[in-house]
Image (cartoon, rainbow, N blue to C red):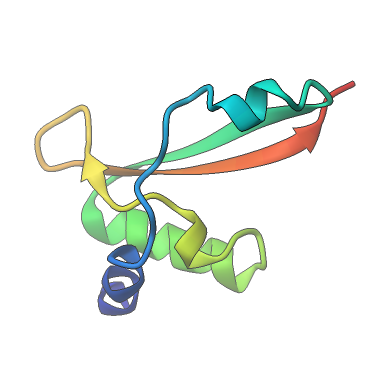
Length: 84
């Protein structure tokens, strides 16, 4: 299953800066980030499970990035919601 994710990961644009000018112009929206950290297999499997549950498309996640500990990777999903 991780082969499918890796094909999509190459198509995913790398994450941009946290505060882009377009975000600053939209005060009624706030960004939320979902972070998955773990083994390569665990992260890709979780992303695929979330896709099957219609939580997020695989292409919406960042490419696999080095994790905080040796042998770990991480991926980030950014969503925008209406601010209160």
